[in-house]
Image (tube, rainbow, N blue to C red; front, side):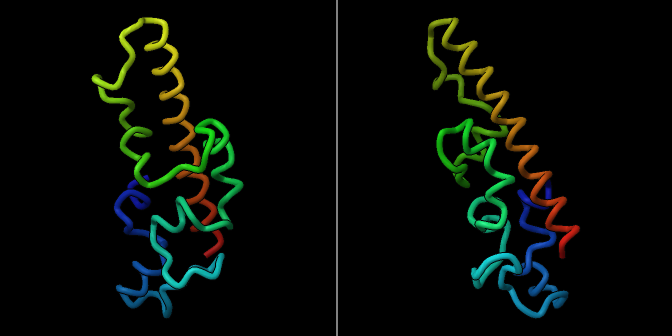
Length: 114
C-alpha cells in the first residue's frame, strides 16, 4: 500500500529516476510514463484487479477517490437519518476493503511480473 500511495516502488518512472530501469514506459500498455497513478487507476492491464471495486462504486476508481476510500466520508457528508448513515458507512467500509485488496493484488502481481 505504501508504495502505491508514495509512488516509490516498482514503477518504471521511479526506477528510471534512480537508474534502475532504462525507460519510464509502462511494461504492460503503451503509456510512455509508468507511475503509481497509471498503474493503479489507468493501465488496462490491471482492469481485472480493479473490477470488483469498479462494480461496487458503479464506475472505475479515480485518484481523487483515495481519501474517501481510505478514510471514509467526512462527518458533514453523512446523512442525518440513522439507517442511511449505517448503510453508507457499511458501503464505505466494503469499498475501503476492496480498495486495499485491489492495491495488494496489483502491486503483488506487478512485482512478480517485473
